[in-house]
Amino acid sequence: MRPRWPLHDRAVPVVAWRVVILLGALLAEGWNIVNMVRSGEPPTEHFAYFTVQANILVIVLMLWMLGTREEHRPRWFDHVRGAITAYIVLAGIVYAVLLAKPDEVWSWTVDFTNAAQHRFVPWMVGLDWLLVPTARRIRVSRAAWWMAYPVAYLVAAWLRGGLVDGWFPYPFLDPGEHGGWAGLVGPTGQVLLAFLIGIMLVAVIGRLRYRATDSAGPSPSLASSPSSTSSRPYSNSSA
Image (cartoon, rainbow, N blue to C red; front, side, top):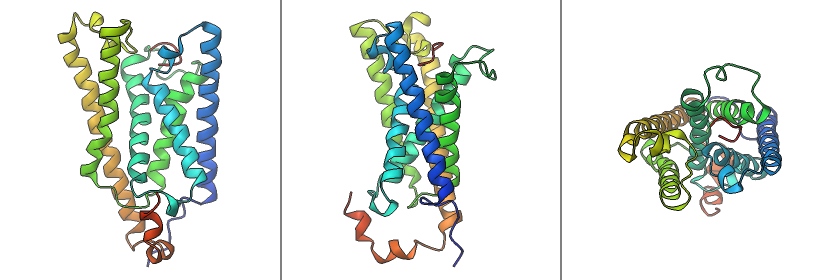
């Protein structure tokens, strides 16, 4: 039997890494909320940004992983972890490619919340996924369900902007920026395609990392008590 991969769920470096992610995400969003109150930005706009939502999901994920042992998490947890990893990493990529001003992409003069939510947190979470294997093999076909949240976000943003208050969180969702609703097919389709490819890539990496590190089978504690897991379950800094 191969020796256990050192970067497992309870390894001190992994726990420390996840604490740093949690504190960074909490501090960035807390700072955002202070700026929101000071500037008078409506909360209904601030919390409508995909990046903000994805960072909040990261906070929940880190709390869950730090507070609950691997064997006590539900069987579908690894898919939740993979989906949130894909959302936050892709949010950072989409921001850099489509939303950031050209001088912002590689600049280190951007404000803290921008850097944290679009750079540090996405890549730290991505590295966590790459280096810390899942508890169970990811079924790549099931990762298609990870697209449900981005699609629901898209529909909700269009319904709000088209029927409620005319506000869209991003230019690629705004028909006024593209000559009408038909003009959104290209930019929105590109983003959705990027998400689909990114999600599948994250899922494949998760599956390969599992097989590369735990191919000898589950740990004795998991093997001896299978029922223990199966029964328990834009330009502003907010973009």
